Amino acid sequence: MGSKTRPKLDTELYEAEMTKLQAELVEMQEWMRTSGNRLVVIFEGRDAAGKGGAIKRIMEYLNPRVARIVALPAPTERERTQWYFQRYIEHLPAAGEIRLFDRSWYNRAGVERVMGYCTPAEYQRFLRQCPIFEQMLAEDGIMLRKYWFSVSGKEQEKRFRSRLTDPMRRWKLSPTDLESLTRWEDYSRAKDEMFVHTDLPGNHWRVVEAEDKKRARLNMIADLLASVPYEKVERPDLELPKRPRSTGYRRTERDLQHYVPDHAGTLDGSTPAVKYGDPEDADWPTPPPSGPVAAPLQEERADD
Image (cartoon, rainbow, N blue to C red):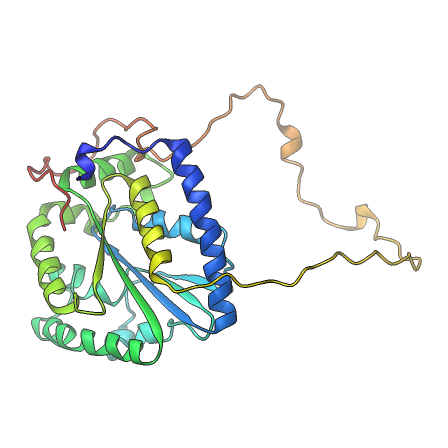
């Protein structure tokens, strides 16, 4: 059943299931840490498809010394002269670590290909080398999971419009993001060709239906947990030690230290509380159309 025919997921049900999955993520993290295994998770898809939100919920309770997000900026002039995969290699995990790539080396097959940021020869070389590179990772023992977040043109435009008027998320939009609306079919063709070359036995792309962000996050995290053969790690019982008796230490006088101002003490309750919610979620109103966004696209299904 497609997401278009299903009701939006109830928020309380969503949060309850998310908490269960996040607890399992903590268990998986401990198994990774103690077993010395290595995990790379790639998040790809169209702009505003929900990759960042999924990463945020995955990382919420994980140890940042074990699990880290890799979100690289545009390559420097020096990096442009390196082997294409070189700058990603230094971010691969060591024993017991997890790396979440918020976009990855697949930039070359997507935005670089469509926007002309690479040459045709560089693009063809990437398609040849990428399966070999990923096979090398697998042979070295790195677990690789690749997720493609699929969203329709109508839903993408809705999320772009929301971000144009949302000061908390305005930074997520760039001219390149907006131009992706006018190059919808170019991106579709690039994605299809990328899948032909890199959706391979033993190393498949896992497609996440992302019209409903809540369902997408739950489905993606549940699939990740099911794909990793982790086991519950027994942890030693810990007890708090007794505090030793004082040896005469005296704290430094308060007026000799520089404390931050008591901003909280200035709050008197007269200002109405303002709770921020993601306007792209169903439970929050969608801002009115505004800004230079292209006309609605006719394609209603999620683009795979």
